[in-house]
Image 1 (tube, rainbow, N blue to C red):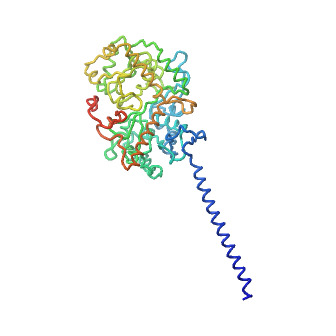
Image 2 (tube, one colour):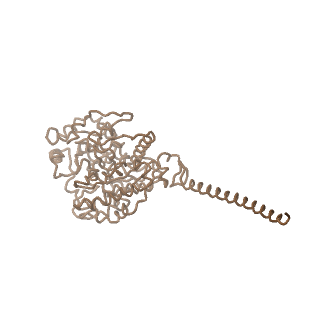
Amino acid sequence: MKPFSGSTERCARTFYVAVLLSVVLWALIFYSTSLLQSGDALSKPPAFFSPRSGRPDPSCAGRYVYMYDLPPRFNADLARDCRRLSASTDMCRHVVNDGFGSSFTDGAGGSLPESGAYATDQYMLELIFHARMRQYECLTSDPAAAAAVYVPFYAEFDLAMRIDNSNMSARNALPRDMADWLVRRPEWRAMGGRDHFMVASRPTWDLLCDPNHGGYGNSLMTYPAIRNMTVLAFEASPWQGNDFAVPYPSHFHPSSDAQVVAWQSRMRGLERRRLWCFAGGSRHESRKTGRNQIIEQCGRSSRCALLGKAAVTKSPGEYTQGEYSPSHAMRLLESAEFCIQPRGDSYTRKSIFDTILAGCIPVFLHPISAYVQYTWYLPRDYRAYSVFIPQRDVIGRNASIEEVLRKIPPAKVARMREEVIRLIPAVMYREPAAKGVQFKDAFDVAVERVVDRVAKRRRAAAEGRECRDSVDGYDSWKYNLLEDGQTEIGPHEFDPYMSM
């Protein structure tokens, strides 16, 4: 057996070396896997991580938003192609300054401050919101940590470029592409898009066109992928369940709390020489909105003023020919106690928020113009900050606007104006890069309410049910007027007006 003893020893040594190498190999595999897992953990922000500061930020708990980096055809390319937005107006001048448009100064004694005043076009809301989201303090690169997911699609830019195209398929091409792109994303599949939201610089009516029957607009909001999302627009449909109204952008975009406080103080101290005013003109359907009757009544009164022809630009330049300049409009609104707000081209109009900015008490003729629209921003008790005169009474000449306003006691007028001035910060869109700002603007309110809505839907999903915070149909608007804790709807004082 001696001849085999060396071989046996060599085999034994080989066996032990193999065992040792195997142990080392598995140790390396385990160690490498651990590193990879810890690396993944480090690449994701923990619960209280603020991506902008790189430091823990407890204030971001439950407020994180994940923003898609969309292919440029859905936003950046559309903005660059701004000359196609209008055949008659140079819209590229409105795209500058992150959608605020060109800055301007009123000079000493002007109606707008020397800093923060812009010639802002209402259709730039998508651009404004996107720019602000890029600077949002609780933006996260981890969709799993996000309370909500933002889709920066420029729906208005796309529709404006194709609105005159009679081919419905062509108008729906990019919206269809957007919906298809979303449903392929793992972020969308996590909740079927119920944690997603987007902004539209359009009344949502324009995005609800039946794809099978044509009509004005496109069909973006009819697609199931979008129907699951929350859509923010400056005019929402009272009969849709997933769209919510946010303020039109006005002309003052502050960058500090001090600017806002100074503006509010100035609005309190203004001498308002006129009882009422109307900043607007007639429309081809003025008989249905009461505009003709408003202009007629105002023209007969010494206590009312209209914007007048002097306020309209005569030639192209800083403003488009035929536009009202911001300075003239704001000067008029600041001069009156009450500002009349009939329906615009649709139910709402930008002047509503110019009026609030001016500290003027709005007078509405239809509930859809504000009361069932801006429920995230305006008090449920509309009498606290506004006057309601039914449109049908003005059109039928059954109501004298001036007589109604004269009967309001001065003490009540003062309380209403103070409430309007209190609302000012929440209907502004501040400078995106402003630091150390404490006041909540329109963007802050919108994100807060979206996050709250998503949280309710998330809790419902965890309980195996669908969150029914609103429904489609005739009574949809009533759900948005429910107070906290209320779940049942019933007859409402606005019922007689909702079919007008």
